[in-house]
Image (cartoon, rainbow, N blue to C red; front, side):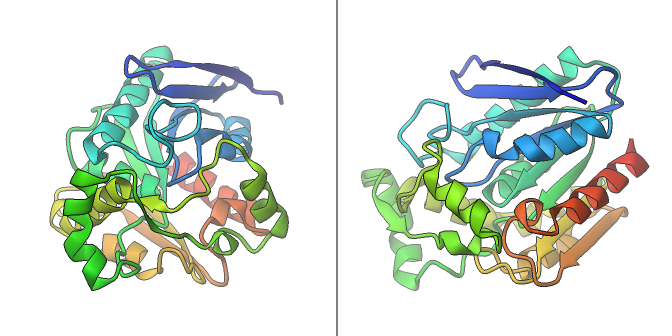
Length: 274
């Protein structure tokens, strides 16, 4: 089946795109990670559309086709507003079906910030992949200086990410490096500070998160340790929470050699909750 593709701009100027099928039984809003963009989830969208779900996604500020200084999300609140806007757009365009939010890495943290705030009441559950809840990569000095540097030099590069840790599939890593819509520089002070502040405050917020959750993580993830996924299970108030650790997989379970099984698990969870 060939999915239909649409794209546009939110009022903020952020770029959004969607993939849809003939008779969707649900909606999935994808929230991408740091330095990447929504287009990297085309294969995920194909699989979800084939399973009966329309997929919508937005490029965060400073990412992909959205405006802004490359790699700089501006603020966590701005990123959350973009997710909320595309979620409401999707729910209005495809009314009467359950809505799910699927966030990966920084996108997992953004999704959690959204879902623990004032999310659209049509949302039926969340899929959280390798949520960026671990801040151990930052040195003590970086932690102390981050807020000041974020205010004075928000675009200063602070942290280099290991692209080899994205996937065990060398083709995925090669495509990541070659993609002009990916940002290959150091994480900016503003993005890093927003991530760190949000991650630190998240455990206390999770107690109020009671919707169904599927948390997944690669067991060999070097960018975000699997303990971050376990932290969601430990603190979330949801009585319906599944935590799946894929032993041996790297940071992007949906882009690993085992991705067919990962997507099959996601679809099974969605089908059980729609």
